[in-house]
Image (cartoon, rainbow over all chains, first blue to last red):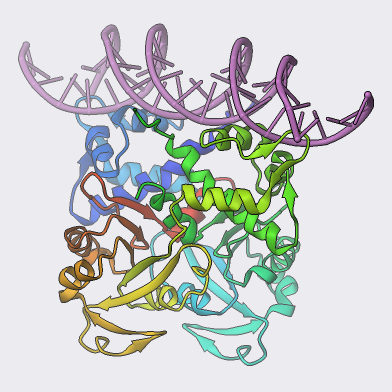
Length: 205
Length: 205
DNA sequence: TAGATTGTTAATCGATTAACAATC
DNA sequence: TAGATTGTTAATCGATTAACAATC
């Protein structure tokens, strides 16, 4: 039976829905509607209902969505019901910030190992972990069966380190390096380049 | 004469084109084609030509695009021919990393001031600047005519600080706080939430 | 029951791609 | 000139919205 392929644009909205629903939980809310959720995050109510309907029927006519139930469903859909161990490569300022980042708590991820190629940094402790030598990335990540990595190395090293991560079995890379990476099919990259984010806004200024 | 409105999805690709073109310049290339540029960044050649044609005719049949010329045009289109001063608010690990970030060099931005509300941090130096008191955001930013800010404060403070930034005249906010912000029309926000980036990939794992 | 809100269909809207004349 | 590549048009494809029967 051919599993229906969900458009990437829909997948990309689900984490935003989930984040807002968790926020509503913190505020003590029990239920919400597509209307209310949409207003919070700037998406139309119809779009939210259409997106969710790709995965099942999670609401009730007249009353809307039970937040806890929908959070559970989205958590399952996004495959974050278990916590993913994450490797962080490149212990400059940004790597430091990610290594100590508290925002992964309750979102499906935890930092599990740190790498850098600077002998002066290898062996030192950042947050809860000792920085390991980038030269050992392949065996160490493979041994730990890590699938997710955050890349914080300089542009000059980004593609080389990426190749190692791919060889080690990493399937998802979040990159802070402002360069396009080439990866084989089956490996995904998401880019977080602050300059790109700012330039998307200065166009309008 | 009614200026044609460029779709946001096109605007969002321009910084990526520019980044790759600058990278080509570093590699010493003089010209490129829509085909070659597209292969580098994973966009179709037709789409690049279509996008660019919204703004003018920048290429030559048979030979493609002069990279330096196209860089200059895109720099103008994105309004980054002058450097924007940026205020960074929230001097936790992420704020520190942004304050000392070198990646804004040559991309149209420079960090110009830092704020935090923690008395223990106010007055201390990070990178090239002394941390100022968040209580003074409105007069200080207004006095400096700053239009661009990076938000690195905890979720609990994000909306309040945003309101101050808006009141101070900020028109573009890059937010690392994992929460949806509400801003008046004319003010833009871009979000960089690492967990959202990762969740967009774990769906496929 | 009356009011509210879902899930879904059909219509609309917008973005991408294919193709090619123009021309360097 | 022959080959390459643009800018643009028309066709295709996909995403969003509007509307509403179903039903809580």
